[in-house]
Length: 395
Length: 181
Image: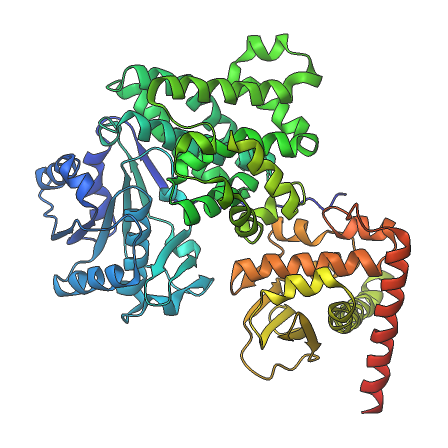
């Protein structure tokens, strides 16, 4: 008997496809919620993405009690406290987060305060602090990448202390994730590309890092297949709602995969680069993915080789000798990045971003070494290794 | 029938083994921070007075060390002088036994959800590197390879033997001092 052991948990009800938003009133009513609050940001509102959500509720006689639409890109403890204040004042009983990672994380944090009480969200920071289920919480993602709709984590900045507070609890998982293709139809090309590559990285790292398990593997491979099939089609035909739905589902599946099997070096480098150079997360993922896979190659040769089937399809997989499949998988990812660069100039190297200087690489390497994700990377990363990967990713 | 009779003794032996290993590791952490420059460099990033704990849930064996500054650790036994800053908690004594008997690597135990981290995750990553470094020194290479993700390629036999001897000497001295006290 081996020591192999794993845990897998995802109680989120996924409501996906055409007219999915119209299921919100029924689902809320099923949880005895009558006064929902929407938490979103100005960009989502300006893009007109709230209208179908509100219309879907109103048509069923469910009024949205209040809307907070000023969530900043990096949400803070102050914002969370303010929104919780409005929630209480308006006597809301549930939260619908509509947006990307920041709006969703903010919704999760607000739900902690309004369910547990108090004004100091920092008090609930850490793992396993929450002991009770929270208020009904629904998520409507408007990007197809973060997977936050199925993760049990939120990160909120404590402005006063200048630190990012992590919150981890299975009670943060939403009751339902509503995946409706209308919500991503207007996503600009570079965000479509970067967020899809974020999902691709979630799935690839979930499948190749230390905590991989049979259930997360199934979600990861399905996500990679969907992204490989649909991403370039959607880039060429942004109004392709079927393709958009495929990407949105892939993002959710990749989210389920990585929240149960964690990620590795790509995320460690990406988190550090985001913190130091303020580059978008999805862009960092796309940028580092092939370089980190090359670094890990000899420890992940077998699972990475398997991914060729989902990246390139059965013909290419069958025609590639087993010993060359891992390298072919990396080539497929590089080819996809080249195609995205051609379509929307999504940077492939740090130099191409124009926002990173060579003298920042050491700082990025040092910070990446202390990132929690590095613990799950299959290969032990030293400072010199991290520097070498960054030098390769430079130009 | 016999197995049923033996079981309590097995459990007791396992508990004693884990307790002993925590005592050795706590003292060895203090010792390695006096001996190895790489460990000192890792520890320097921790705040002075930082308290680190490894324990078995819910209230089992534990080891507590403090970063006293300049990259040095002090072993406090199982009593913390202040609230703990970082705690790595095994969910069950069986999981602690798997790791401390080198049947499961620390990194694999994390990946397998055998342990929880309560505190700053970046400090937990750093302390895991310190523990790996310690295990690479004090265990025979064949055993260390089962305990750490990757045995350090730059750790050669002479350095390993000299450092291990110094660490074990300090651990033994500390044990004797504790008994005398």
